[in-house]
Length: 273
Image 1 (cartoon, rainbow, N blue to C red):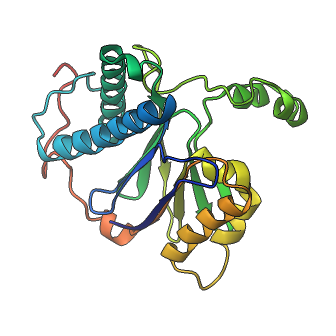
Image 2: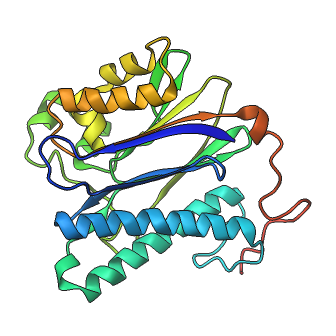
């Protein structure tokens, strides 16, 4: 289904790595979660997010009679429903865990997740970890940041003004910060030769997108070597934060023959289960 390379590094300024990731080539599931809330809280929140997503996607793929805790939306694909339900579950688990332990009350996590589906990919996004698409020598950000800075740029504010504002690092959405969480779910077609890049802000922030494109466009590098080079680029730029990188090379020939995850000939579950 895919070949991937994943790397996570503490960076040069932090003493602990609060990022978590999943790179499951067989299931076609890839995610990066960037924890917040101090050493204990950030680690716990990002791990809950990663474990919950992987567990629910696996169980909902294997069991077509599974109960959908947040409902099934017929207008969305099965994969999109899997991600929507899993993200909401992770959010609820983080909220509940934080409420039960005073040491974890301020914890939260960003999340960028991608699930391969035949010749497309479905993605979910909360926060400012990112999903990029490398296609035909061009790097394009697929996800949209849930941050004050990004919202101001989308509203027409100048990059210079935003870069100097004291609220530029504030997130507008994150797992664990509210019971009623809005989740961005999208679906995008794949083409031969595409490479997906999932990362925490510890990569693109210090390194910059030009450096990312330069690494991805370097001829002769394997996918593993590109992942290592991306981490090195962020550290060379100061490495102020944890850095997590996943590169994914989808195998369209393999994904094209995938069957319905609910069984050959099976219909999607009813919206009310």
